[in-house]
Image (cartoon, rainbow over all chains, first blue to last red; front, side):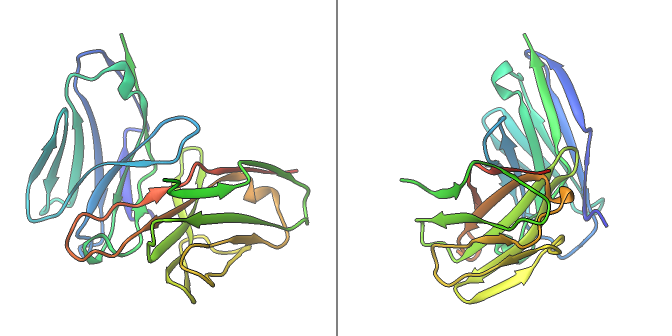
Length: 113
Length: 115
């Protein structure tokens, strides 16, 4: 079963726009929710992460919003740039992130100038 | 500062052949993982290890084997290659640092085609 569901599968955004990617999880034992960014031909790299004791975390143009009661979290990319074009994966883990990461299916983001 | 190194980068195998995907990390991380990435399917965990001598199955372990004799190395073995194992394989490592930020570092991937 898919423990972490991610949507949309692909996203096209104009430069300067806001990109929003959503994830939902089932296991209430998850307590660490990272987002990974992957460029073609490269391995994923950590972008930003959140723990359930906060509802929002912001790093530059990237923000994670977390809704514990709904078991949902989302990535917002403000002022999207062509350089943000990549595949984004949400993930979840137990044990404060020390347990294995369970990934979503990925979202391919294309930002057009 | 190499991080996680995977070899080879590309490989074509014939059905029934065997091979080992190599993975080594120089960050002294306890945790190591093997994922496979298929289009539209995200990253599926094959096997993982929490330390030398300890391995455990992930979501899709069938057809694969691993070993962890040292902290640095975590090879993935395919014994009888099948077309369903055509995929991109990623090795990753992370450190158990309690409640601090935990980051998994990924290798560049191995693109495997079974024909």
